[in-house]
Image: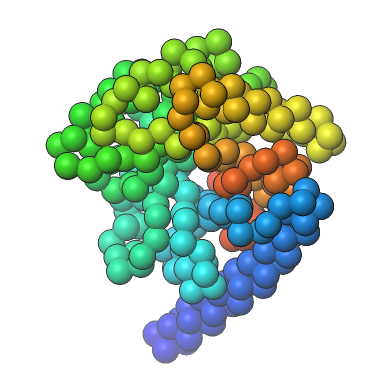
Length: 249
Ligand SMILES: *Cc1c(COP(=O)(O)O)cnc(C)c1O
């Protein structure tokens, strides 16, 4: 028993050290990408994507300063949540949400970054109203590729933004996208640029600020920062490789 306990503590300490070292490297990469783009690093929020990792890993990231966390499944986060009480963080849902889980999502998350239909928006609005809160949201836009099938397409975006904008218990902050995975990062740049242009266009048409652009993951966030990302969603580069692939679904 003693030995097992010691081994567990050693493993947890090792994980903390690994996360702390990754965090340092990650922040350096963000800072130099920001600098190249003539931006300030503090304009960019790193959302720590903790899906598949245990609550202990989330705490380790919290200890080295992360305050925004992304999870892609309601149920997975519900199961970790008890172990995370007392942390003053913003919990975001970044994966596809089925309308029938909207109420549960509003109970446990502070933000929904993946709104992709009017019916989901209406359910979220009703759930937020019940709880007497205003819920910040992003609209997820699908710009092509097979990696993610969720998100509203470009054609439907304006109508959806209008609907979300009209819901009094939702606060539309901006747009999110998951572009196709490209080894050649120059091939992903047009997707990030496109999201920014869509945001700029909507913002002008709706006379609404829409400050948030959530784009860029571990392998491509530098390009996203160059194209104006205000939030990047980073899992692997902070927590290490995931053993399960659970992207977006
Ligand atoms: C898993 C996930 C990420 C993080 O991916 P990494 O490549 O591990 O950084 C970002 N956004 C969404 C929506 C995800 O599901």
